[in-house]
Length: 506
Image (tube, rainbow, N blue to C red; front, side):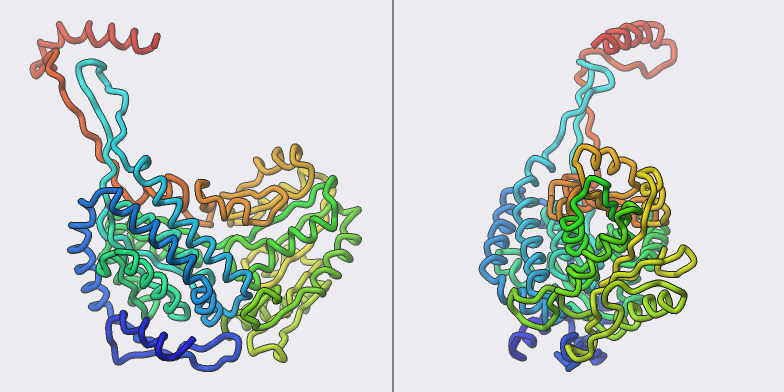
């Protein structure tokens, strides 16, 4: 990506003398220096967005729909450049960058298509039929603050920003410093499609200062990130009595049923565990296999993992890219080295690959992991999966649920049996014969976490309506006056009692 193109994108940020270096994960070399905004500049952005939202909120759904269908086409037309930017900032493989483009086009298309039906006023059953008429309007909340992570900077950006906009809100987005170019590139295409630039502002800066400034000034906060930060965001939003949604981490299990083909199960596990080098909140980190098949499964998964191709290419001949930075390498290495020192056995990987780049780490499979080890229960967020044996389906389900997180899960094997098992797993999404894409790519399906994996849902109609306030309207038809004095209930009470009996029959 040229310096000219980078400068063209960065100029859309507010200016600041404070800058941080943003490096290419593949090489460790400087890409550019990113302005770091202050809390006051964030407040100014929110004020400007609020002014623009006053007009946008009154626009027709058809006007908004046209812009986002145009955006859909622009994403497709510019997909190669978008993938280049995603790879430049994250170091992920081309295939996983393409998944982000697919998520972006899907989001633009889906929310544009469902918006009119989802947002139209809906008539409700009146409390007193014939005498009253009621319906619900969906009113934009105002300014939505969207705080996005670095790991899926295009998909997770558009999956939250677009429904907020099409619901009639304006957006102030805090992107992670590492992936601000991706957010700016997506925004530039939306502006080209016809969106008022003031309706979507991207801000960057210190996580605490800028994130807190967003939460302190907007009308709704959508946060994706760690549970620790999510709790802080939620507490701060709750103190202001504004709504919020949190999509947090996961320690996601996969259960291999006795009926499963082990080769197919291994392929599904690889696809679920090593997408974007495992740096995905819905990645599989734990695999449960029938005890009598565990040794054979480990041999199969070892061969398949060792055949994966890692590298830095901008074409589709690479299976896995690099970790995104030094902190990620330190985190992943720390978890694995500690577990191995405590007795975990390495089936595959287990070491960095500095010959490929400064932050590459071999896709790793561990076994003999005990519940005393940190990585048994904590999310690693890297190219790692641990394999456990089980004696019964009940035991497998119990072990799968023995975690404080409940974001994603998978079950591999006979579909009829897998459906029964899936209902018993405490996770917001469960995929049968797939790792995470079956649900993650289904935009009509609400996605979110149970337990400590967050609250609220993105995608589906709930993922659109969460950016609105439900406003109830009621009309008194005047056919019979409601009583205003106590004695008038002598006449009204028998009528209401009769209506109650009729309504029960109906």
